[in-house]
Length: 154
Figure 1 (tube, one colour):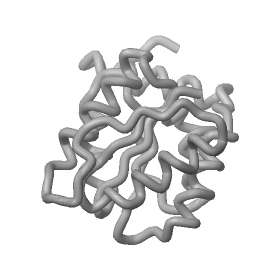
Figure 2 (cartoon, helix red, strand yellow):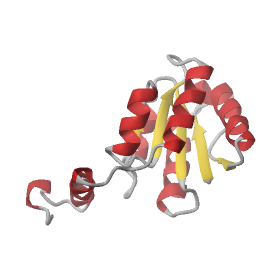
Figure 3 (cartoon, rainbow, N blue to C red):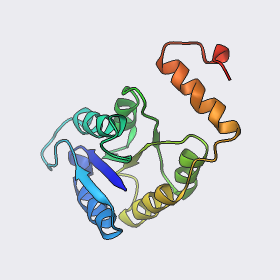
Figure 4 (cartoon, helix red, strand yellow):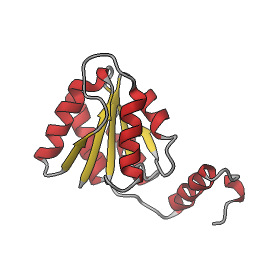
């Protein structure tokens, strides 16, 4: 799988570790945006990763900043992105199986590196359940187009 990963200075160490973890699993990994311990903006890494996923240059995205909130908000501004702030294996599984998340956002300040490994492993082994959840994903696309999701075609 082609995975894009990025974030900000607070995510630096986790980004480096997760990129190695993913490569060790046999994935093709692109580290995008700034990779520095010097202060930088989470928006830049989030934009780069989200666009790689939206443009189908990557199959999945991983973002890491201090809380995960900034990268999640930023990534969700890109059309076609369903970024989820994930903080354990359950939210990782639900983000993929129910929401078809294509970008996962992690908190470097609140999560340990081993938990991040487990979260990433769960994300990559969980598939979208479709079924009743497909209707909701279609409604998310309607919102992106500026349409009322309650009026979106089934």
